[in-house]
Length: 426
Image (tube, rainbow, N blue to C red):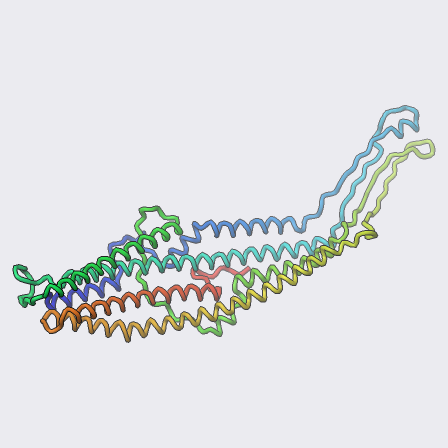
């Protein structure tokens, strides 16, 4: 049997343990969501792949407005030797051909620019995806740590029940007789609390392994997450919907639409080969004497048998498909935004009501029941019921805190709001 003073001390220890992160962790092992997100952006291969895609598109952009190289042709024959009767071979012709891509280069450059901007938007979207993954892993670790602390506090408190008795020093002088059935109930409570500790520690180890793996930390790195708290109230939904057009995903798909539309014009300019300007220099034998001839010309393809309309039709179809995909993405993103906003608002309200209408009353009932059990006014059944109700309420409240944080991360992802600072929109 425990005294009222001991019960109050145990309750105080539970509150402190469940609300405050231990100060024993060093500064390097204390992680917040922002620091974890920055670490993931530094080490993740996904972010490096997005950066490499930008470099790819940058190379295409550099090459897009480059003129094709001229072609030089040299010709040597024995024509002059035959005319003069001297024999031998001489250089008789030099020809230079230069394609003229007047219409094609401008359109080709427009497509490359759209692809480059799209790659930049994809990088921004990749950052959002990594931030959402970082939030999921980090909040899972926060929740696992809080559950371990709560389970250990419960076990410590339960182990104090029924410890008073004859021959036990330093205990309350009031001795209460516990029947064998009551002691069995206490043993079941202790075992249940011990099993809860084991399950919580197992989940914590899983969360810790995933956190270290995602952040590329060593297997023995000291890790401790900040305290799990209630998510902040989101801004107005109208403002989020108004800024949805700047969402990286929609911006990336919009650049795909621009590139596809530019591809139609490019396909039209590529239906036939570029006209070619030809400049030539020839040495010939005219009027019984050698003469130099300089001339120029333009060659172009005659669309007699092949109009080459297939690539143009294909480009138009691709533009229509890109526009349809943009509309689908916008619809899905708007739906995801509204769902995320509704979920977060509901979870915030539920967490606040749970704290006010369930957790606090359960704590008061548990405190009064523990006091009554210590003085002999409450039986073991009331103590078991109050104990289970209180710790179940605390566990449920922790789950709601984690759910609000995850919902906030999903809302940021749906709204296109970066956590680690806004990246300049290209």
